[in-house]
Length: 335
Image: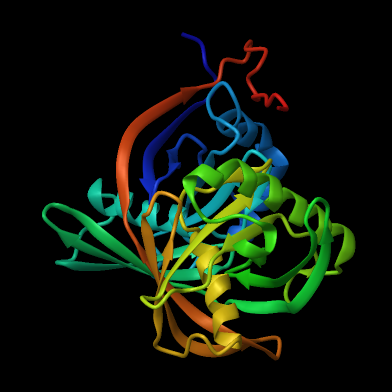
């Protein structure tokens, strides 16, 4: 066996989306902030991102949380997030999974039925509360960073659909176009996945061609994520599907997207501080979202969101990188 790099991961799924937590093999990642560490990784080790996320070690829909040293006093560890197309500022599924892995594997010592873990992310420190029951982590709550509506009540012309009303919202650093499912001729059902993907990608193309999106703290930006959703029903349940990357549809209800939608619901008067709703993914698995408070981001109204969800550990892996391997850095075939 010949390899100049061995990376260890712990695999899990959160509400159905399979992910990996990269726990060792990188060595120390330099940087005073998580953003600095992510940039250093991007500049020096981006071939490991593609090598892990793409074939033959990964797949086009894989998202990986990378564990680093903490940068905030009291934090246990840091996280940044990689996927085949690049990097994410935050990821609810990944943060819930990382907290679950940390407790269940003993990386972080359990403190009774509730263990609080401070996790550094590029969006800022995130307080997580892991609740223990029957020898496993039953659920994790994220007390997250501000979320807000960047552009409300927009209309774009979508190929094959016509005029589509939508909103641009920011969930803990990630930017989403949010569109109601009936406006693009779909329902949030597993049998509609192909159509959801097609319509979501068409919406993304229209948004980036027709709208200028300026986000406080980010500036002018493209919109890579499209949330197709149905409004909450009488029981407060709101099905949704995220279209992201090269046209993937997330089976889970999307954590940062849930926060973006709560900001939108708050602005529309559908949710108040202290209110909760159920964000349901395509597999019928849920996150619970809660608005914990109000704040501002560069003078713009914003909310302080919380989400609660559950992860399950699925495996342990060690990945080898042979310097003679012709596809060491991975590949993706367009389909």
